[in-house]
Length: 638
Image (cartoon, rainbow, N blue to C red; front, side, top):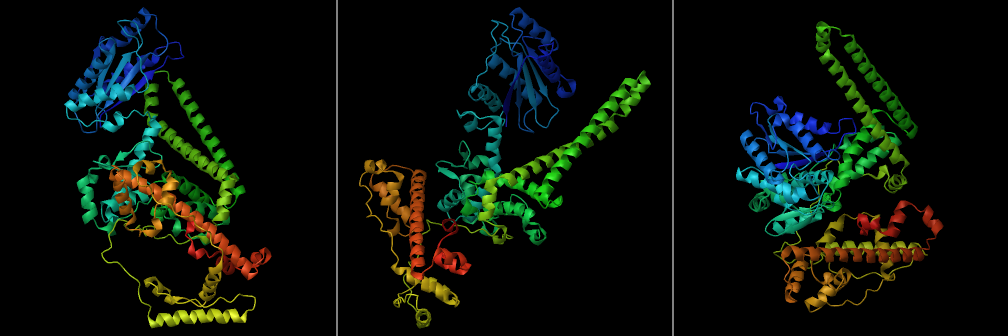
């Protein structure tokens, strides 16, 4: 795409204050750069005399200091345009921007894959002596729009409008960071489209990955950390609305493969690693869980962490390959690398010195010819030294990162909370659990399933076993046998219950009488839009009847409610509103669940006579039963 780059030339601190201006003009007029097209020209000056004429203008207005000039580069997309078109665009660009009041040199370079034109102009106006003014925002408001308009006349690819017209300013690193999201978004959009059952499910999956989705005429997404939304059809033609619908409808979900960001560390036999090396394995391992459980961990939200995978991979490989088994080994390695760096720098200085001596020894044309003939060998040796030096510097940086991590208390706390020994197998990194479609209409309502005689006998025998166990042990309180109630299909899965789970079921019966936290009386949703808008997010979540409506109908209920009170929000706005309320409700329920579970655990400890001393010496099974962690998901459990 056609893009314009702007640079300025400062006053040099050397004796020749305008040396940068002279060098820029000399560079853009090099014959090897101009190529066969040889297209170069001047505005208000002759190209070959441009530097002298600009210098004279500065002296005439007594403005020889400060910025000496400006350098514009207009680049086209590789394979587009002709040198003549490029020259015409550059000349018209300079005339329109400078209003024929500045001396400038224009040259078209053909030495790269893409055509590009250079424009070097004097900073001093030749008419009134004023200096050229460039302000923040001029690129988006004036310069790039001129380039876009001129290139459109020739049908050339231009900078996307949403970037050139967006008033938000970004530095070059920020802009590059925004563009680096493109690959991540492209992979995730394709992945979700293949997995989705319909358009709503597709948007839902993207939101579960951590993206903010905006749907209107086009679908646009924004990952956490991005400044603006990015249209998916601008990322790739494959993601136009028609193609997305086709992917959703006819795509094979078995072909959906999540993006893998780094190598799989599972193949390494951890038994051979020292305790110190396992720490680095564990750090890489934890981020691999983000890949495998991507819908649970929201990979778009963890984009910065995923980028850290490559750094962690470097650290892990260096620790293993250099056989670093402890912190002293790491310090020794860092010192060795510093010594290696000094040796290479010494060799480099010696090579420079020997080359200088050889040059000073040249007295005639034959000596200079021999000196030039030895240049390739000298360059080869120098490049080899520079490459070695670069690799050693990189290794030193990695060692410094490792040392800082070892000194970090936060890392120590994390490693104590999640020790290496408790890792699960993540060898199959493509085995991702995909969330179900919350908007899918169930064709048949599943009612209660009658309990078979076999199941009744099984449950009765378990209850009897609990009573027998209670009679044998006097201190344990005997809980009356609970009546058998109708159960659903989920009970059938429990037919493989082992004997060890009987005592677990007794604990659950014991805590039936535990004090329960009293929920506040539920308030109804307001009847008018004005009253609804005055409510906070928490008040909306408290009033919304989540517990009375099934999950597959709750969103439709919310849309119908907003329609009733006269809201004119679009689908995407309704979805965002509902997502915020639902997330707030989940957090509230999570907090209530934690409070109830703590009360149950304390009550159970009292019933069992479990003192802190006894609890400290109890085995892991008893502790797990006291906390009944199997009822909690991973996050709430922690």
